[in-house]
Amino acid sequence: MLEQFVTVLPGTLAPALLVMVFSVLLSVGEGRDKPFSSSWRGWGLALGTVAAVVFALLRATAVLDRRTMVNYPTLIACVVVDIAALTVVLLARRVTEDWHQHRVLLHLSNGTAALAVFLTVFRALPDVILRLTAFVEPGAPVFTSDMLLRALGFFLGILAAIVVAAVFRTMRATCSYRAFTVTSFLLVFLILVQHATDLFAIMQTTGDLVLRGTAFRLMSIFYNSSLKLVLAQTCIFLIPAAACLIAGFRLPLNGEDAAHTRLNKAFKRKALASAVWSLVAMIGVTLTLTVGVAQVNKVPVLSPPEEYSLSSGTATIQFAKVDDGHLHRFEYKAKDGTVMRFIIIRKHGAAYGIGLDACENCGDAGYYEKDGKIICKKCDVAINLATIGFKGGCNPIPLPYKTTKGAILIQTADLDALSSHFKS
Image 1 (cartoon, rainbow, N blue to C red):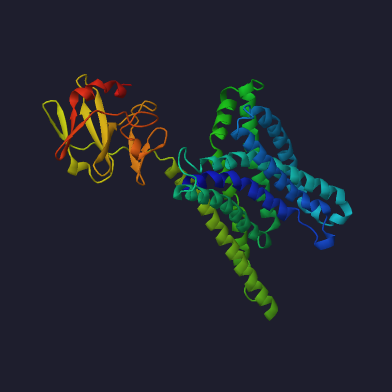
Image 2: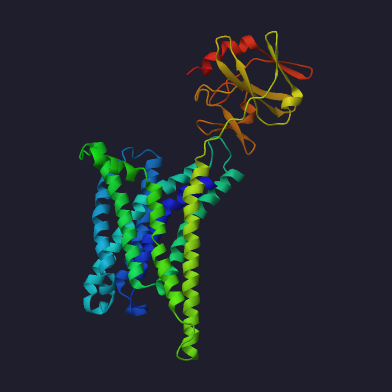
């Protein structure tokens, strides 16, 4: 669940924030007085989502095996539209004041915002949508508790992005317009940096652009800092949060009369509440993109090898040592000096899974136990417990053994013959 959540949240946060800031900056009129172009931003979001779904399906079914032919032109469009969107942010107040006097300018602004939303959504969502293919492990039943947890993490990631944007939107009524405009400008600028970096990376790959020295290193830094850019898109909302706190603390509680006093108190509560909840949202996103990502990417550590009896060419492991149903790891030094590992796990009844701590596909990366499953450290595949001890796939390489009353016996000659699996 956590893996889905920390992957989906950064992918949906930028589109959610972009939709939110344009809805604040360009909203004018109510009911019949509302300009018809105000709906264009919603259409941009809807069409961008549909286009992202189609693109993701084409990628998933391998119908489209060259993404560059789509990404290249769309990224050029993204950069151009992002630059235009920066202008819209700067002129938003002038455009929305007395908008009846310059309707065409408002329609152009809404059209630009709609294009920016469409392209940002189209760029961000395909990778999020493709996370749906990770809900069910190959060969596993469709409806399992793990699948439901992955689905929950996926939808919680989308919901969290929407909630964060909604929380930040509450600051529009209590912070200064300038603070919100500056933040909106920085948001669009950071999105422009993302799109430009991806475009330069593609141009570098196709040979249409050759970056060297400082320029190439700078592009590499931005290209490898996608999560940091998402985090920056969130942290810039410290500006309106600080503005809300300042406005709330500066406003005196006592007004000219009882009515103004009530209004001042209500404004102060609203300003402080929106600032505090926005800070909570920022902290939540920060923890997700730092601690959460680190937890997901944490490399599992193999458990230390356990002791066993080794005498007269025979390794003896007592049943009592391995009959708890958990993974047990043992180490052996072969005649050629190779340090080997083998594992034993009780499967059911008197059946044991015994094999090398290595497989034909992933080499000697080893296996670890997590949530009752045996998982390959290299490819992260969960091994079917019943197949341990049999050849094939990512199963541990089988190891000959015998059982006597109370113990498992493994001949060291059999281990020596398999030492090549632990040589680099």
